[in-house]
Image (cartoon, rainbow, N blue to C red; front, side):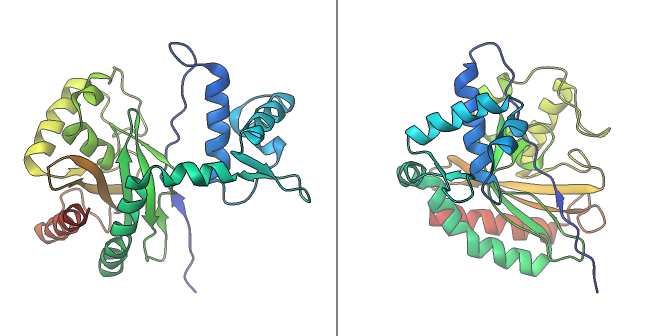
Amino acid sequence: MSQQRSEPLGHRIEVAEGGNVVRAADVSLRILQMIAFAETPLGVTQVAQGVGIAKGAAHKHLRTLMDHGMVLQDPLTSLYLLGPKIWLMGQKAPEGQVLSEIAAPLMRSIRDELGLAVVLSVPTPKSAFVLATLPSNQPINIGVRPGSELLLHSSAQGKIFLAFGGRELREALREPLPRATPKTQTQLPNLLAELEDIRRLGYATAPEEAMLGINALAAPILDRSGKLIGSIGLIGSIQHLAAEPPPALLDRLFTLTATIGKRL
């Protein structure tokens, strides 16, 4: 019997206090995200520990979110889950939903064909935000959780957004870039040179830059006008996904991202 082991590669982006960050709003939003992406409803103690605040403070934030219909409390278990207003707000932002719906069957097809984990993400000012994932079908499962935020400079999809996205993403980078592994690129001039190559080649890799032993290969999703919409990433061990991707694999990835872009 083969052993299944999950290796989540998501990097949560913690917002530093100071600057333009409003502390109360930051805490409430982090609580909301924590509840949204939890696999089960959460208790107030879990919420407090997850965001690093006192239990009494967590209760006040949760009560505020409940008053606005964004969080509900189960009357039987006292656990917290998303409220109805979140669903309604989601209907007003259809682009991500449409992108996920279009990409899902195509992602499953390439996963079943290649056996690699497949990740769909969209750019944010600080990260590559994971919309949807399909885990690999290898005995050891490597994947990324939906809702994870991948660092821009050390993930293949993040590099895609830096290379093909707006100039403001690159201008926001500051040295020293955070080091996730000994192989993470932390020198900004070297990263900018790599981004030039990514624009020329049309794809990005991140061999052992986010986690040792793991590589990722990504390409951009562009709509019919050439606007960057998102990225598809393939993730696997170095054993199954080499640092230098073979042409056949690149062709398969380019076909996938082009098909998604045309269907948007």
